[in-house]
Image (cartoon, rainbow, N blue to C red; front, side):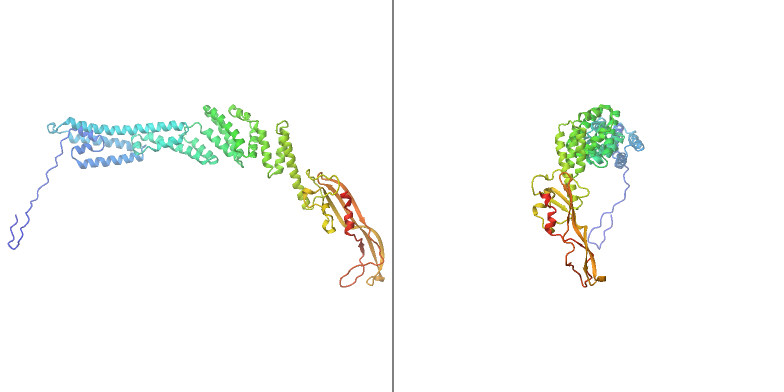
Length: 515
């Protein structure tokens, strides 16, 4: 005790003496219980001994090794190290409890049962994850082999770190399968053109297990081919070659190969542009195959080929008349006894007429019909009485006051195409002298010529020339007084004069065409 301070009104605190920490005395534990408890790899044996630091160390070491195993389940060094660690903690538990006095132990049976139960539970959990991993991979394999990769991926995606620790090799096998299945799912999602390439990548994958992949890839190639374009023939060739390879490598897929070809031929009638389908028919017709799974479905669909040919002709008639004409002619040549023969004849007639109409229209509007002329089979017939509407080239009917019913300004109403040269200088009629102050000697010789009109007449319906004539107007050569016009200065009469022609005279040259 400290002496009291006489000047202080409060007592001094008691004086404490320093003492040494009592030595650690571990709790006596049955060696079997300690080893069994540490067999959990979680340091439970150390906890039974009240050695908390050792228990924390054991838990930390185990957690580190489990993390490493989950990250690299195929690593043999990590698995060997974990086994060595497990053996070490078990031996260490035995070492620490080997000399325990049995008299100090209480109910050893109860302790042993609890420890062994904990170790058994840990082993049961390990076996459970291992079994679950095996079952999941096995189920995924079955789904994968059946082509149901969505189910396979869904099953494999539930495998987690504990499965990797418990059965790493099997989980890695499942991950390889999952990678292959994801390729298959991706190919299906991408559509025909991209999907076929991705499907080929799947087929080259070492874990590809679905025998039907080749057939499905061929179907994708066929779908892409039916879309038309420059790649059509390449995709067709690849698709049929894929089916041939499938028949060789997987004879069990014969029925699916046949079904794929049947579906392809059926789709040509339903979802394919008619002319793309025709191009595909032409390509197929050039091939030589022996496998019945290919040739029989194609032969069964042969009746649809002429119908697709006719459908292509009709399709092209909307904006490709010459192409449509060629396809119609091909149909009539190749299938003269077909039920649609007469319909094709009538439709070809209409196409030919439209082609002629377009050609005639272009020639008339460009004033180029006369060399050479062209027919339009549906033009109004040149028959019966007047009027006979004319399309006049080389002369303006309005300038000469032609009757409106004589002329036509539309192709549809035209019966005759009249090609006119003139009015122009005709033959020489006579020469006369006229006084002229501007001429040497006071006289100038003037030549008088007739005026002529050359006419060629074509029937528009046939394109044939039905008339050709020349009309000449002599006028009044060598009049007593020659009238002429001049500018600024009178240089005398002209050296030649053409006969003047009235509008009535010009019209008279065409009256015969209206009889």
